[in-house]
Image (cartoon, rainbow, N blue to C red):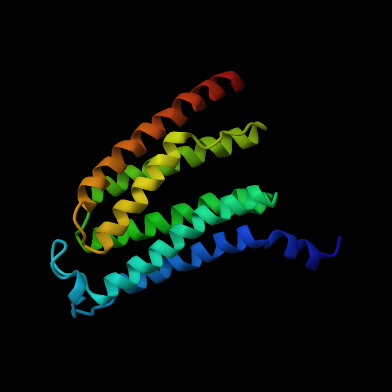
Length: 197
């Protein structure tokens, strides 16, 4: 097959949406780093200190990127456009987006660093298990717990970016769900590792 045709098939709509999500992550960081002190009037009385225009731009970009996460999976399944590239880039894009935003929030002192370290550690462990499983010709499917924790992470990060109420509490919930879903993967992974030794 012609290499150009292969590239066009690989860069189908779901995979393009995933790639867009990767490129939106640095924009979230850029907007959060803007030293624009002018508050947004309509959001001034809603949270812990008025969000700036940089916060609003970062929040809007993060929400758009999160929406692409739902769209790419739905489109890939509905139109039968699931590809090897998609299986690689989709979870990677999710992690890049959420972790980048969380690291920025640590720098802005809106979330404790240790919570982010716990979440990142879980992602490394699960990714490692999946790599081992792949090498053994096995697949560790995404668990319902993993999907739920992603939803809570996205909502918590959005609220923290915009300095809206409930962000810190939801981040705690997201952390516990992250640990819980990680334990699910570890339980399944331990069985796999024992069986393959």
